[in-house]
Length: 296
Image (tube, rainbow, N blue to C red; front, top):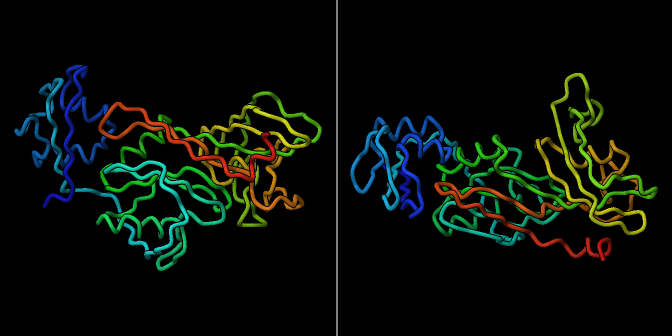
């Protein structure tokens, strides 16, 4: 039984390559390619074409997916919509997550998270919600969600191959103005043995973590930073900046003495390649108003 069908017409400037080369170029996982081949579920202009045969500009590629190994999580539906939609197509949804709401449930039956709200939103389209990545509960910003299972493996490969990138805006504490114009923080991260909610720098068993930042603006003791990640560890930006002596304003875990009403960390920009195309897409989440007092 076909559970999903994808049709793509190759662009006029497409350079000929084999069917296998095309699927590899699109980052289609090998397991999906296997089922497309043995079931002859990939058609070129309406006919099955062996994987070593070439496709050309203008060819219509039809992929019928009957075997998909992505686990479907049935989220409880939450009809509230605290998020705003930044971009949407047949396969993907990009939303602006507000601060203070968890990205996903930690267990079955849990409700009132962003994914519960997105699941309710997509249920009206007879679609499921598939999480691609997450951001901390206290962080706001851009979040990418799959609407079909076949794109999840492709997007995961974009993440692992670092062809998908996210940029954050952080307001860091810098009263002595010692932050550099740009720098890289390379410190391994592990779970804090004294507080499971926190992470700590762990040179023995910690996982590699690399953060790059650029100083954008200074205002009094506050410094506005553009931050990019090479890795995606839990609390990575928050812990790295705190370990560098410049915690983020409003961070209840790593700067608990600061009175700012929320964590001033925002996922501003997401860059990725549209699945089954070469189209590069950039989606930007507006900076929350609370940040304006530090950048004016």
